[in-house]
Every structure is written in C-alpha cells, then in structure tokens.
Image (tube, rainbow, N blue to C red; front, side, top):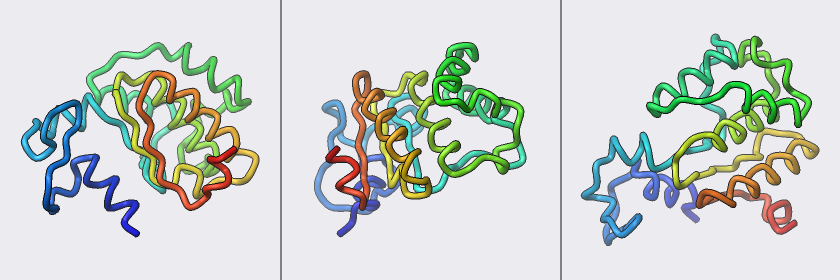
Length: 159
C-alpha cells in the first residue's frame, strides 16, 4: 500500500520517485533539504527516536538544539503534569513506557516551530488508554500545524 513510503517522500527522506511533489509551492526535489528537515517539518516515527541512555530533560535539550530553537521547560512541565507524567524529566528514556515516550514527543512537538508534523503509526506501540491521549494531543497539535498521520488503527482516528 505504501503508506510509509509516501511519508518518506513527503519528508524528503526518499527522493527516488517520478513526478513532482510540492510543499509550500516549492518542488521538494529542489528545496534546501537541511532547512526543510530542520525548520519546516517534524517527524514521529513508529518507534521513538529518543536517546535511551539520556534523561528526558537531556533529550528535550537535544531536540530543541537540533532545531536551533529555544524553549521554556516550565511550559513543557505544565503539559507533562496535565498527563500525570511530570515526574519523568530526570528519568532515562529507557525507563519510560511506549505510551509515555509518544506522549512526551507529541508534547515537545507542540513547542517546536515546524509547520508540518508527519506521524508514522504514532499509537502503534502504546496501550489503549494512552492511544486516546495521544490522538487527542495530535488533534490539539493540528490546530497550529498540518499533521499527517499514517495508521492501521482507522477506528481510533475516526473517533
């Protein structure tokens, strides 16, 4: 069916296709890929890409530094508290559940300036309770950004 392949093309990670893909009126084959990946888009992969041996706080720093963006940790803490996971900041990523990792990532994405978020099976590795939380966070995220979601769980996203 090619869902992940389509995402890879839109993300600029797969350039082996025929035809033209335009993002913001620009041909994806001709744009500055580094700028596109760094400032225009964010990606949620099927498995989280956090660094397991680092703490949540260190991973947050790395993400914002990679995007050349400042952030207010207090605002992130408020969101973490809302989902009753405010105690994770000093834990190593490897100690978090799949659901905690995905929720953390979606919260971080709310503070990044990227215009588009691509999500490849964003609820694939989390339990049913956290699936609903993650989908609601993605819905909230879609108020300010274009959010593409690829998922086998069509019923979850229909809700």
